[in-house]
Image 1 (cartoon, rainbow, N blue to C red):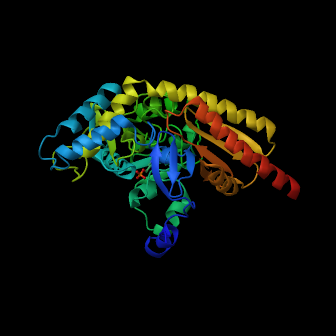
Image 2 (cartoon, rainbow, N blue to C red):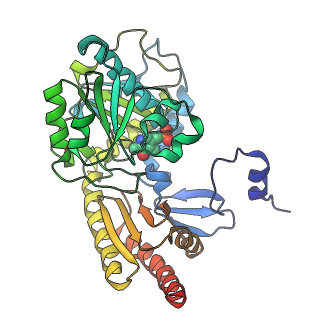
Image 3 (cartoon, rainbow, N blue to C red):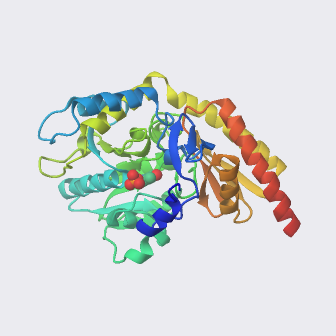
Amino acid sequence: MPTDWKEMESRYYMRVVRRQPVVLVRGQGTRVWDEDGKEYLDFTGGWAVNNLGHCHPTVTEAIVQQARTLLQTSNIYYTIPQLQLAQLLVEQSCLDRVFFCNSGAEANEGAVKLARKYGRLHLKGAYEVITALNSFHGRTLAMVAATGQPHYQENFRPLPVGFVNVEFDSIEAIKRSTTENTCAVLLEPVQGEGGVNVPSPSYLKEVRAWCDERGILLMLDEIQTGMGRLGTLFGYQQFGVEPDVITLAKGLGNGVPIGAFLAKERAAVFEPGDHGSTFGGNVLTCAAAYAAAKVIVEENIPAKAEATGKYLHGRLSAMKERYDFITDVRGMGLLLAMEFRDTLSATIVGACNQEGLLLNAVRPNALRFMPPLTTSLAEVDEAVARLDQVLTRVGRETGARA
Ligand SMILES: *Cc1c(COP(=O)(O)O)cnc(C)c1O
């Protein structure tokens, strides 16, 4: 008898996520397959991670080669992939120094530590970080405090101090909340988990100017927007600002767990002993991430994300014209959302599973699209056709109820 993996999960795994009823065993490019051999178009992109698609041959080859050579050493020794990746990221960005860790939350934790040390050195001990409502910065205790969404916070109080959550896309809200205790502002260039919220074009420029005026750091959480997702290698490049610090994870390793934070020289205030990680900058993950980042840069994958994103945005917008229960299509590059008048997301995601299309219900009334940046226009057409089938059915059913 085949193993019932869903039953096994319900028995042994911590109850932290309502899983979709899909057991994935294989992936290639934009497609994944379940245990029965059924194929799906993965428009969750491994959760905005597989920017080059599943099992990209260059990345897989780098992992295999490195796994045969050296897996792990201590960071008290030099290892080469770590330094190659550091050089590439610094040369391709406005930042000067990098630190590698193992996840997004950990990258943000490091960035906040950096900001607190900066505050200690240059801002008379200021320690507070301003973040936005509807943001998402990770699941550690401090990042739960940074994340401006009450449902992530309520069960875990008291939360670490030093975070103020203010309205997103409002320079006035940031100005009002800035005090002598403020050392930094931490924002996503486009909010991902919060519903794919694109700020007005002037917002980050105004925040930059305010941070300069007050001598505080502008830190951008590019964990979801970085590595090409918005149509440029880094999201900040879309908004005409240079941040003092950025954090990366998700797309950085194309599927291996790696995070990073990068800082301008003047903000890179750590000294030996201030920070560290056993696995951070690990040879295997850095070899994979270096291979992935090289492909992203050399093949100008961000430009592909821009073009494919425009195309998908156009196809989704055309659907909005045809279905009156679609109220909005928004986003940037290949980070897009479709919003509904009612809380239809769960129903639609369930039906899309059956049609062979993986999507994320980012809000009860909104879907998020974050496919690999290498997704072809033909695959977009295929995904849109599968979604169209589902929306026609849902439209008929909700119409019948109306
Ligand atoms: C996913 C995400 C995180 C958290 O990353 P983890 O690797 O899950 O810790 C933080 N910030 C943003 C913007 C994210 O999208």
